[in-house]
Length: 125
Image (cartoon, rainbow, N blue to C red; front, side, top):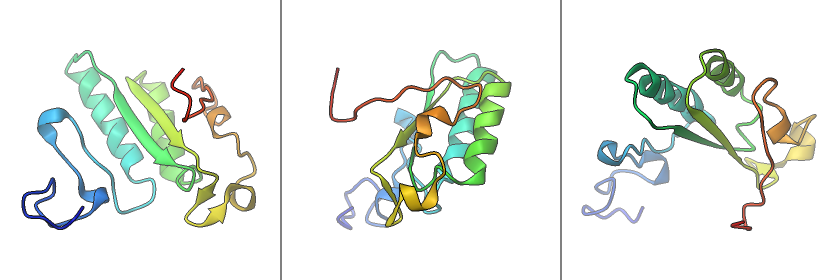
């Protein structure tokens, strides 16, 4: 993040370029929501290889209206993949309030047949 040659990205990128295969951390992406289908692909690999693990797929409320999110979620549920979708909702996507960009601002309810819960991010319990 600080452009240091000794840093996580060897000084060649910011937070969207973090990646460390040895710890199964596949980082972010420079395109809004593009990490979601990548995460579902990782979940598919886990299932295919019979690995007892789960892909945690994080995205923000700005990505919640992206088509690839719905397509990836559909595939994850259809194929029963070990995928956990986590929406970090700060009420603004790319500077636009969720009320101006989303008909349903309860993103945890959008999963159709995928169960969702709402959690307060500042409450560890």
